[in-house]
Length: 167
Image (cartoon, rainbow, N blue to C red; front, side, top):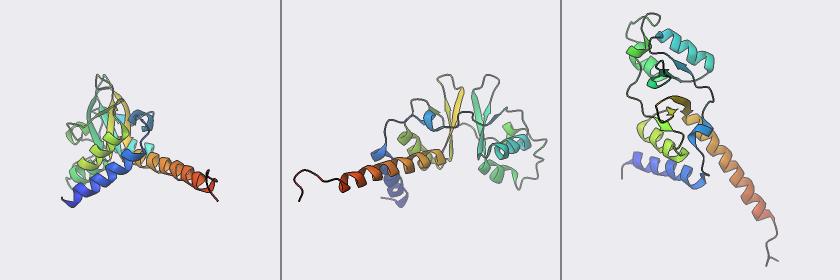
């Protein structure tokens, strides 16, 4: 089996074994960073910097996700292109089509998708494609670390308590 499949298997297993039915929407930023397709690339970058995020959703006038613009887009599509970020519309450099999650998407499913496809951000939408939140791999990892901390506390308490039948 290829090494990447082994890493994904361990990562997915790690998340799956500790998952308590957690919706990705519960892990998202409550007010996701977003810009319109006509916004300049510079405006999108300013929004990312002001919000301390690595991606903005590009949403149409009805708040449906039209694309995503990420730090990777800045590096791979803008940095060496000699394009002017102030005059270039973000629609010209955004990533599309966009992989989307819904409120029903489980955290482990989102995690596997993000690891497998090398995504750091995943927009969460309603059934009409309207943006509800932006999930970051950081959100998933922080949640899992907290979950493991709670599990460790529980196990330590269990081990330190006298069990029936003990000496």
